[in-house]
Image 1 (cartoon, rainbow, N blue to C red):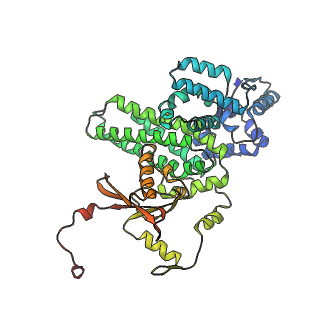
Image 2: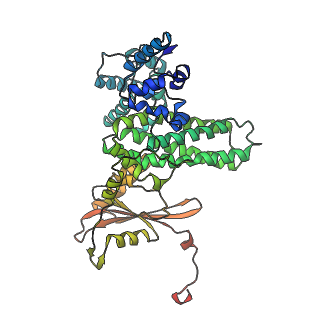
Image 3: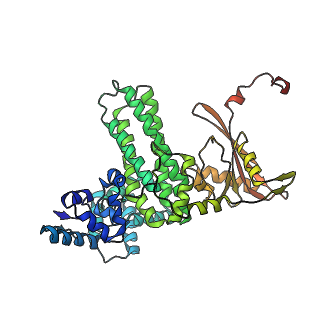
Length: 473
C-alpha cells in the first residue's frame, strides 16, 4: 500500500483499525475520528492531505509516523510517496510564478504546456496562494471579469495540486461544516438530475429537482453577505468578487433552465451546463475558498460569519449543534449594545422604541454613511431583499453583484456632488412589483451624509381605486 496526500483515512482505518487510537494520541484534532456524524458526512472523502490542514501534524511528519506504526504492529511496509514539492521557492516567489502562468493563460498560451510548466516548477500549491495570486492580479489592474472568464482554466491548471489540499471535516455547527452539508445535499440533487433519461416522460420529476436545486441561492447569499465581508476586512476581496460573479452566472442559468423546464423546452446541453457549473462551484469552494478561509479567519471571525446566517437562511439543512465559541454570547451582547433614551428634533425615544418604529415601517430601509459604509438596515420580518449582520461596516460597493457596481458608484457620486437627490427603480420579482428608491441624506448645511435605500412592495398599492376613508374602516 502506498501512502500519499490522496490516501483516504477511512481506507487506512478499515485496513488498520488500531490507527484510530494512534492518530488521536498523535494530535487531539484527530478526536474527530470518534465523531460518527463527521465520519458519516465528511469522513468518507477525507484524505491525509485534508486532515493535515487542521491538525498540528504536517504531511511530511504524519505519513512516516503512520508507516512506522503499521510496520511495528503488523510488519506491513507502506511506501511513503515523496510530496515535498520544490523547496527552492519562497511563498512570494511561488505566487509570482502562479501570476505569470495565469497571465500567459490570458494571453492565449497553450493550456497543456502551462500545466506541464506548473508541474515542473511547483509540485504543490496552497489554496491561500491561489487567492493571493488573484488578489494581486486584480491589484495590478486585471479586471475581475477577465479572471472570472478563465477561472475554470485556472482551476484545471492547478487541479493536481488542489486535489491534495482538500478541506477537511469540520466540527458540527461550524459555518464551513454547514456549507459542506449543503454541498453534499446539492450533489445528491445534481446526480438525480443527471440520471434522468427522458426529459419529456420525467418532466414533472425534473421540474421538482430543478426547483429544489434552486434553493442553493441561500447558500450563495450567506457567502456574499456573511463570509465575504469578513474576508474583505482582512484585505481579501479579489477572490470573493470573482466568486460572486460566478454565483450570478449560475443564477442566470438556473432562471433559464427553470423557465424552459416549465415550458417543456429544456435541452440536455442546458441541463449539462447547469450541473457542470454547480459541481465546479462546489469544487472551488471546497478546494480553494474554504481551505483559504480556515487558514485566514479566527474563531472570532467565524463568530461574525455565523451571527447573521440565520437571517438569510439555509439550503435544505439546518446547522448541527456543536461548534460554538465560548465568547459568543458576550460578543453578541456587545454587538447589540444598550443605550438610554435619545433626544430627537421632535421628541424623545428609547433605543427599543426606535428599533420598533423602524421595523414596523411598511418599507425596508438601509443607510449608507458618507464614506460608503453600510451603517444600518431595518431587520423587518419579511424583507424584500436579504440582509444580515455581516454587511454592517462593509463598503456598499461590495454588497452588490460586480455587474451593478458601476451604477452604484455613479449614483453615489451624483449624490455626493449635489447633482442629484434621488434615484428610482422598479422591478418585478416573484410576481410582485417592487419599488426601489435611493435618497441623498444631507445635514442642515447641505453636507452629504450618506444614502438611504428604501424598498417597498407596491403591488397592492398600484391596484387601488376609488376611495376608502377613515370612517369606512
